[in-house]
Length: 291
Image (cartoon, rainbow, N blue to C red; front, side, top):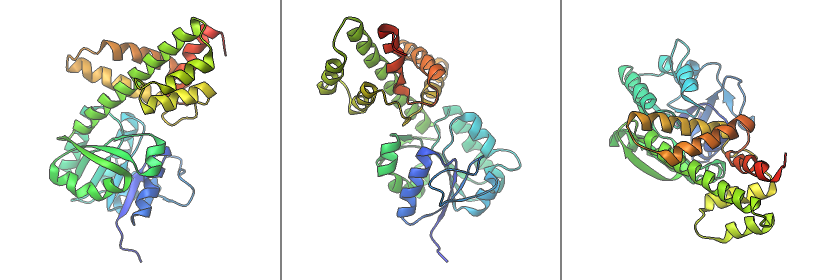
């Protein structure tokens, strides 16, 4: 029987299943819990409850959509915290409010469990290739303890600071990503409204250095009308909402990001499960009368 560490995934969707595949290649054993009991490629063993998973796993890795899903899977009689042994390690890669990360770490401490907030920068292509950037919040010794896991899923680990800092840094990154896409979409909207040829416009923007490689990838998809979800609009809008809430708490003025949040809220309403770059389609429909 293998003595390799067993990692229990709470959440096993598009990102987590790809991280799991890289961890398996690195020698870890994998089990998972999802409410549906489904996910990944069908070869992963699923546990009936988060508590059952935590009782069996050496390390628990949470990758769920939002604060509510995290609370539901962590707390209560069937939650992870009820099942983990004292001395256990829980790595939370979910993008949640910084205060949620801090509260979870405090709950873990009361149970003798080490909890790191470690959201990742990157989308499904980076998760598949093992090139994520891990944004870790916690004590240096705790980050060191988790480093083998981080090395298997990512190309770089950034120790952002104490618990909660990884969550804050993730909101900075996603806020820039969402606001920048909104600006690019507005530029495209003006170009189309002014009569520029659509193909020429998208091709020209693909060549200029002011647009990042990430947003050039979104432009290519938008040109083709392909909004297959690498980062669904419902999750991007959720992250912008978390950023706006904490920014207000910190009295940090973010007017451009606030405006972008409104555009991404519209995108979520119309295309919740498509990629957040569906904002291009929303804006184009306003000036080109397309569906």
